Image: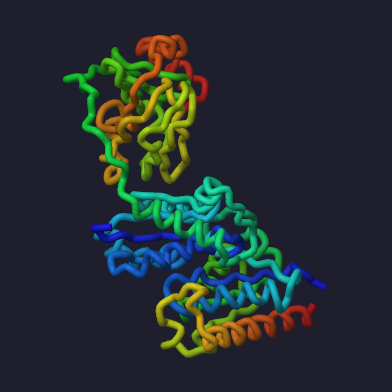
Length: 135
Length: 282
């Protein structure tokens, strides 16, 4: 069992609502759906080059969860570490137009947004399970 | 806030402080004068924000002392006008943030305090009482490709390469030519607060380049009466004129005669610096 040796990186999410969703989906996965089973990697820290994030993504399978088709998380992993083990694009789940709306503070999220978070987290968990099954 | 402002938060996902940096940034972005900068996208596509950065000033919000947002700004050679560290604000409020992301009274208090810090204009400072000398003459020496200069008189230095020059009971503090050459392009000066009292060799703020952060160790004891606000928009003055236009802090002295015992005068510092440069082979 790989346990928490699978990494998840969400995009930083300041450009659009998709980024907000990606961040919350990764938190949901870490705290509720797969507690203790994944390591979340901080993308700004990953890019800044400190903290062992890059080394982790080089050694272990890492999933990118991006808010829009710019795919900042996926591109950063591929640039600084390794090929991603899987990727999720929130825009493909909630639609590109919705994903490109303005980012929101957590307190302004509606039930609809929370449903998007759930769908994104579920999709990420599915990829996680597939990686585990291959091992 | 009267001018346009670009806000670069760290947006950390792993810690509460990172999340608060994002909350602060989103609050600020309610204003049309504020442009939010994604720390990841700017790294990938700097041109996306070039226009906004050219038209406004940059405020960086770091969540913790890893200072990812500052480092990203430094790597991209962006001039930072203002910088806030969420963890330091929380510490001053005696609030522990931890890892868990939460929205409660404590985190709301931290967000409010960070917003107040960003929105408050610089403290009023009285007109300078420091009388500048008409001209300063320098001694120089070279080592390899570097040429170092040290004033011929009227400056005193500690061994941390910070200087003080005195006018009556007032003094100005700065860093030596050696420091600015080591740091290379200076991007940000983090000064102390006006009214801060400090002892000789206390920390008196910092200056930051894309290469490193340099803690300013005060050569004297006193009270801060002014900071060089010109460095907000032009921190490169520390590089261009470290002993004159690039002064950092103006202070009211406590006891300069006593402080002077532990300082080098200009000829002594000149010799000290020559030895230092030779030893570390700059």
